[in-house]
Length: 229
Image 1 (cartoon, rainbow, N blue to C red):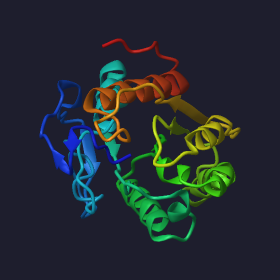
Image 2 (image 1 turned 90 degrees about the vertical axis):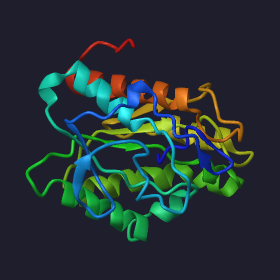
Image 3 (image 1 turned 180 degrees about the horizontal axis):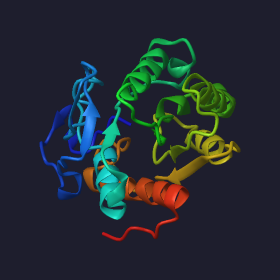
Image 4 (image 1 turned 120 degrees about the vertical axis):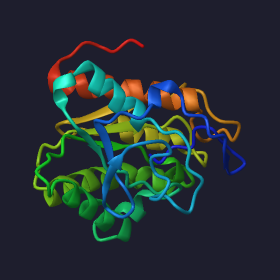
């Protein structure tokens, strides 16, 4: 979920909404696997083959910090690569191996992995075959990740698609909404406003998605009330 909010014709407009402000207790693991204060674009040195803009994660982290001050330092570990199919994330692939490695590095100082935020699938809407096989591949990915991170019930918050690159978006959405694994919570992005390209969420939509993810996380983990901006 690298985030393309504010990106039009491969150029980011540079606008950072106040909901995505820097916060000294929110860090990110940068491309050199070093911790630094997080700021947008969160994936600037991770998803380097694309123009990165605003995503949902800074808004998510700021809400979590505001609603649960005792949470302490929040470490974000960006791993996304835009435009990739689910096959590119299968166990043993470069993207998968890099994701697991970065997650393992993130906890070397004594931290705990609290959740995975997952937003992927637009690429898998191109063919009927990809859409039909998506559910089994996604379930296997989640199970493999939990196994390799030694956390069999690690909470996973996935986003159901708001758009697609091809004609089979509903097939992929059906797969996402039909996942039946413990501690996998689905947040629906359908209906959130898109950029002019008709594919990526706009900056306001990214903020709204960050709120949705934060609500789901805080309710699942801490039974806290829904956040209202």
